[in-house]
Image: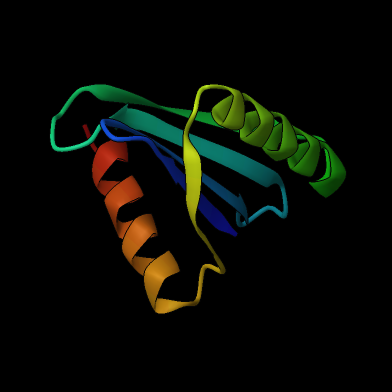
Length: 93
């Protein structure tokens, strides 16, 4: 699952996935749209329920900051694959 929130200038991107060991990973990228400013953080959850709780918390925080959800997609959708590609570019920095 991949979710993206945006405001006029900022974005937050969250990716929930399992790694090759079956662990649940929540990756969160954030920054200013159109710039190189931002960051990336990966969190290892104990289970999917904990990961979903983290995502719910992130969603609540983004809403309180005025960001709106612009995408929620599966990893295998065209939009999801494009967002994951962008996330992997950030991970290499």
